[in-house]
Length: 283
Image (cartoon, rainbow, N blue to C red; front, top):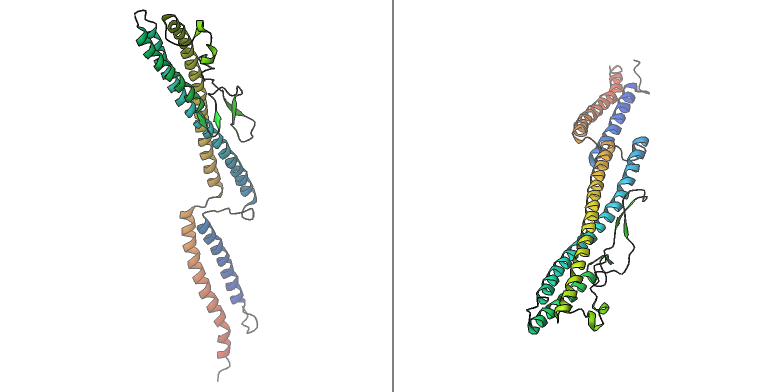
């Protein structure tokens, strides 16, 4: 190699190598800082595009999960209220059965009737107050089922049918028994027997409603679990595409730091080479 004070080829090569090392070091430090090996389309266009599409699906699934969680909460509230209504109907049947006993006295029938009417009011209150997020599927205000989002394309839904467990829905509304011959009370053996028939039918209806609601709640629960697992799988898939291997990047970082130091020393040595020419002119 020709020695020259105008062009230092060794220094240029050393500088190129040092710049290359610095660029690699900067890229590795960025991966270590962010934890990502693909931070944008510039790093790897195809991989980044795939990851972005998967992120979009994950975001859409989050909306699905929110819808499923809302459905679960509404179903849980309705099932809790429905179970209480069923328990009240069992108590109503007990009071009506006792009052239908021919040996019961007017005083005892009045006591049974007072409890009976009080339980009826509680039953109606439970159905009216089984509300979550402004929705009530037990009060009989509507017959249209509630549909909840089930997939990322918003093309599938899961329904939660309304179950009318109000007094009117169970045929226990006292306004339906205005005529003296069909008075809905327990003040006579005949009235008690008639009330008992109505309560038995209401209990059968309530239990059938709860069975249907429970089955739909189970379907929602299973779908919610599936959506959660799908989200986890997508998250892992995105990580496999864009996450950096931190152990490997750490080792690479240390190696590049050593190369940077060696490169700087090599450049320093190359820059000193022209000084050797000066020794040729010393007397």
